[in-house]
Image (cartoon, rainbow, N blue to C red; front, top):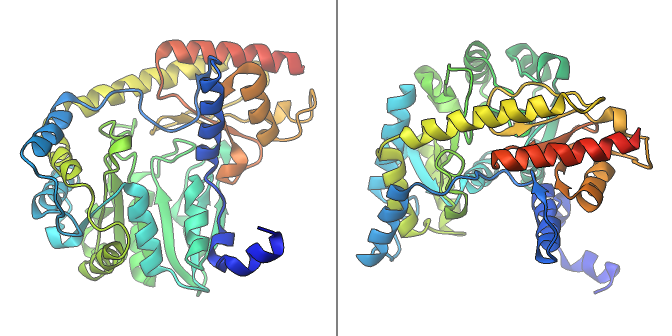
Length: 398
C-alpha cells in the first residue's frame, strides 16, 4: 500500500498515536532471546513473581465448574463487590458495586475513562515523566495533553501548586500516577488531597492511576478515592497486574461516579464486553483472600531497589533519584550522550541492547530526553549481572 493510498484509508485518529515504546523494546528483546542471546532484561514492567497459588486455584476451579460463559459487561456483582470492599477496607472509600466496572486490564479502564470524558479541544494535565500510554490515549480521544515538567532535583514529585498553575479554562482532567511509572515518585498525602479538592472545586476530573498504589514504600499509602466529599470528580483506575503478579490475566477496574461508570460500561459493551469469567473468579480470590503475598512482594521490591541503586553507585557519571514506590529506577544518562557515538537516550538504549545485551527503555518514551528506565522486578542475580554489563559498557564510552 502506497503512502498516498494509506493516507486515504486510515482514520485520522490512528495517526495521533505511536506503538507503545515498552512493547517495541519487548519485541526487540524477544527476537534476540529467540536467537539464543542471554539478556539482562529490565524492559517490561512485569513482576518476576508467579501468580500466587490460591489465585490460580480459583481460576482452575471456575473452569472445572464450567464458569466459562458471558457475564455482565461490567463484571459479576461478586467481583465488583469484592473490589469495592477491598478499596474500602484499605482506604476508607465508599463505593457501591454500581460505581465499579471490571475491565480487561488497567489500561482499558484508563482508555475507556478518557474516551468518555475527553473530547476535541479538551486539555488534560499530564505530569512528566509519564507512563508511555497516557499521552497517546489522550490524543486518540482528540484531547490535548498539557505536559507538566517535574523537577529531578525534587525527586520528580508533583505538587498541588504545580497542578493549579497548569489549569486553563480548557482543562477537563488531571492524570495522577502515584507511585509513578517510570520514576517511582509518590505524590504526598497532603498534595494528593489538595489536588483532588482543587479538581472538585474547579469542576475538573482527577483520574487516579493506582496501578502501583500497594507498592508504595513510604509507609503512608493513600488513595484519592478516600476524600468522600469530592467523589463526583474522582475516577480511580486500578489493576491487579502488579499487586498480585497477574499481568497476563488482564484484570483491571475503575471506581467512580455512577454516571461515568455507566458510560464506561456502555463503551465496553461495544468493544471487549466482559473480562474473561474465570479471571473474574481468580480476581475475587486475589482481593478477598490473604494479602500476605502483597506484603512479601513489596518487601522484596524494596530490597531490589536498594540493590540496583547501590550498583549504580559503581558507575561513574550515572545519577539516579531514589524511587518511593513501584518497581522502576529512572537514572539520568546525560553524561553519556555525545560520547562514543551515542546521540540520545534512545540511541543509548539501542546500543545497550545490541552491544551489552541489557534491556532498558529510553526516556523519550516517558517525556524526558536524558533518562532510561529500568524495571527491577527481576531476580537479584539479574540485577547484579545487568549492572555489571552496564558498568563495563558505559566505562568504554569514557
